Image: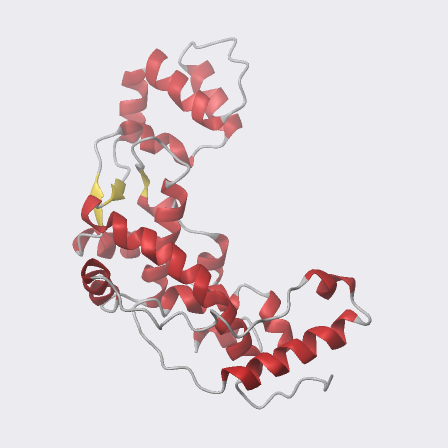
Length: 242
């Protein structure tokens, strides 16, 4: 598994980003869990042992059996179709889509942004060709192209946006919030924004997949605890007894 390039099995993996990574890329599949009580016992024994000497683990919650299996409820029809499409994509592209949707929630009001910029550090460190991945997301209809030029400004930092406005003769801008700077650019120099958007692949989440993506975010959150105990203790590593 690709996760092994960056993380090792054992209790410490529970505190890494590996469980969320697996919860994301394994999203399209349904698993049958076994021996959950034993995995939870071993995970909790590890946490209690680590709490004796390491302050970090004092705030790491113990696991409870209830709710650790996220595959007990049937999936809605629109989610089943969404997962069918995800299964055709490379692992990195599945994570790219979730990154894109997460960033859209707090970006431009239209949710538009440059596709190749919408990846997290965790996705990039495991390897991704963002332009090719974006092409696949558009090809499969999960993303659709957007004609909202403000999406091109999402790739700029606050400093770069301020400099861009100054170059367009917009002086005296005192705000330091990115969204407000983008709004100012759209109001004061829309033609310059449109010019900057040329050649940039701007997209938004396909509306028909919005409910399924909302479900996906919730399912990933529910799945992370399972993958924490599974990665940590379903293999040969034995935690301290406690």
